[in-house]
Image (tube, rainbow, N blue to C red; front, side, top):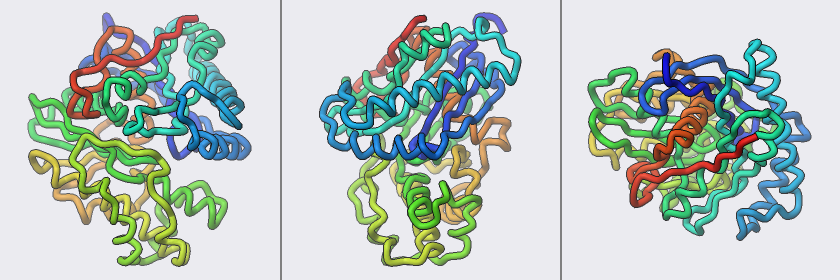
Length: 368
């Protein structure tokens, strides 16, 4: 299609499992051609370094500072993203000269919008120099500086996909990564969006601490357990869930303390219910009940979590793959789309998605 930008999106989410790479072609509006996707895992040492960086980042009050392990982690993140792009292009025989721009989200190590602070590590200029391709990075800072929550950023892409699909009634797109977020889309209306709760983060932390595994694969541990109602109530006893959208939170906003006394399976079941209940809590704040909930992100592959959601939501549930979208590639595709919008000087965030006062432009452009 003419006048489309060929763009690669990169995402390393709060679950810290690796680098996702997606290629799309888009006009930055409603014309979108979805292309190939690849995922490249971090090694155990990389994940350990990122977890150490999260600890060091908790003390930050300057988003540019890189104390402790943060400088080492930033160099590692930049290198792993460069390697991921190079492998992705080589494995698919794609000439990098045909790529117009790369959207590089980086690794979030701190997100405290109430303090005007959001930190994503990753050197966009260094990535552009190595790849020889223009890179758009640091997507969240402009929104936070303008008084927004800086998250979620994917609603612009969700809205474009919904328009492309031609939905005639309201739908909600639920992305369950380390943090869960959702976008409410009604035809002819501006989207409403927010973070909804912990997503996979607490469950991943539980599995790593108790078993050494990175996740509860397929929700197997949770399926073997029972929800502890007292622990669930303690987890939900948080002012965040009563707030109306837009709202955002940090990966480490919640604690495993309420489930520490439980066995593995019961703790996993309770945390899965917590994620679903957080998403359910947003429904009361929407202007209308959605006719369909479309789920993407790693949580879409957790069968126990999907059952919990189906039991709690007021509408049918579908995974993104059933619509010809990609549950796994969604966030990487979104940052490809946002990079194209940044190049075309189109806004990335909106009052209904981050609480910013007016549509806000974002992203820093680094040219090779």
